[in-house]
Image (tube, rainbow, N blue to C red; front, side):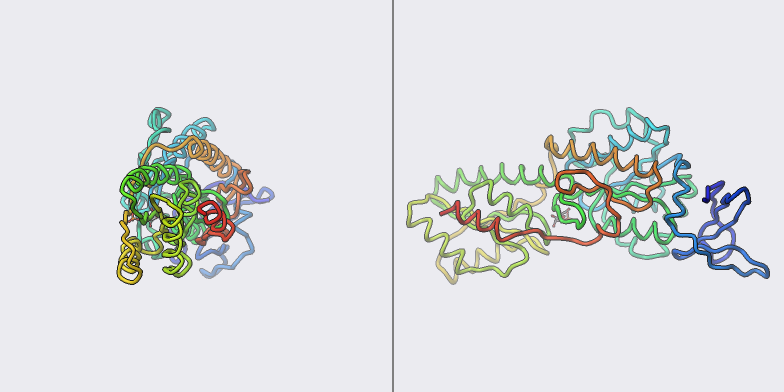
Length: 384
Ligand code: F6P
């Protein structure tokens, strides 16, 4: 069994980092490069050694400090997660560094030590006190190397990334290329990360959209109008489906299916014939916002149906998190710190069938769309 004696920036050309390990009383120097470990050999050579990253769990009890960042689109509950990370880590004697503005901030060295009171009074706040960004540069290996150097220079032993699957991909590469222990906390309103049934912020976004659609329903009924209401979710229809059920929508347009204009027209006409004073069609935005305007044009020009379009947009990302999002965020922050403390190297705090589990990060890098026929059937059965 190896245990880590020392880890430092490496001076040896071509290698990223150097560790001094202890095995059965003797000291080993190992180098890490491109996902592999090497031992120095005579004449300047190096031998590849079979030291798996899992064996590097020797960092177990050596995590003395960790960094936490939010990345990608913010989501309500991120602050509750940051608070939980900070308080749990300090309780375990681990220093916590807030990395501001996601991976961009990491590259700029925008890093500050966080104390217990730096996260006071934030559990109920939307957005993120750490700020966030979408950092396209992080797709480049050289840029990630710079980021790893910054973490090493700041003596940050592990990283917690709160964000979506794009943010997790960056964390995965940091781990693979530089052996930095990382834990992901799923935070996006879209609920579209593989490997977990839930992402922080989804419940709040659905509630915000439901509140907005209820208001639209009032005015739609007063004027006997039909509204297309477009909700966020990118290529996932999770928000659209739940909002559709909870607002009694007449129809939901999913992002992964071609728009069935004839069916929409039929649903609207059927409702009018049986005396409905309004119709609400929920539209999942898909890859690019604005689909509802396109549908409106076709319904007006080809089916002679007058409709209004309303894109809810970023109001769905803001606002105070619901109790559910605060609860899950608090649990995930706590679990993420314990995972690093106990030596997990690349995992995600996931919710599976209602339980919190640690899932390998590699299983959480894909998007997913769980839009399902049963939910659509429910919507049309209730909109009869
Ligand atoms: O964070 C997820 C999300 O809100 C998607 O639902 C949406 O498509 C996208 O982000 C919008 O991103 P931006 O705020 O960068 O326009």
